[in-house]
Image 1: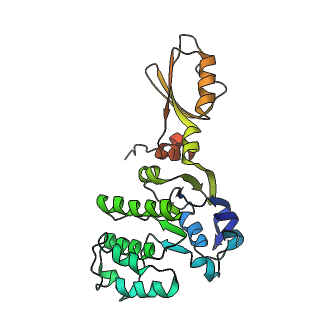
Image 2: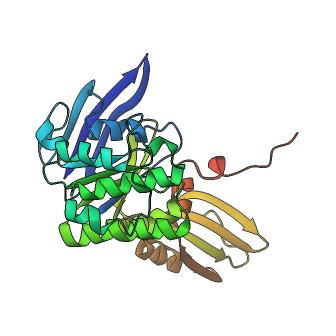
Image 3: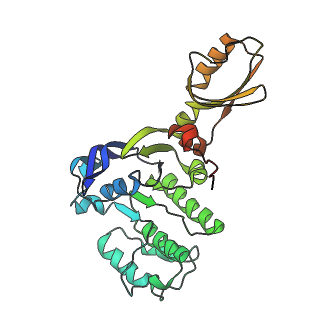
Length: 298
């Protein structure tokens, strides 16, 4: 597993990571989500051994990552901005990766050629952004990593290629037990593939749960009260509420069972519990109405 404990990183007096804790279990897909500037890329660069921690622990299977080649050989990383040597083509980078990853699988490289129909002799920097991402996935998946770290991995890919990439990734998770940590702003897509989710803001992980637990712990309540009833809903942890006519829509933190029991006690005219999407959970956990889109007056 990936374990990050009390991680601190400061740049020119700015505390980018402020005692961050993160735990990525083995053999699943972990989605790391947060607003711009929250520290997602910074923690990823610690996990991949690019940054040295100011303090705290960053370990993979109990071994520190920084300046540890044996651990790094088990990790493949695809960044948001794909990098290749100035004039290198796919075959050049393939040979480079083979020198770093002893487990590089040439048979798989040949097999994935059909999935990624690219010009192997053309300099990677001359390819489109989407094609550069395809090349990065092609090479990374042939490294047969135990841990795959992805920062905005499918940005720039068309819908067909996005589905193809996720299919290959999920196949590796199922067949080889590969552990995937993915940071993305596409929460709808993460909701389809992730087992666990961590929400990060201001350099700290606010919430870290399995996706099913996360979705069970915050719900949308729609309620119509009887005349004269107390509409404040005492005993519930309310994140946000709005009203349309007699229908009150309330975002409540808590399990569906506990909320249902409390609403049964209140006995309104009508109530219903609806699941929230990951995107809705993200918005309300990071500030509710204050984080929602507002009209701008010019």
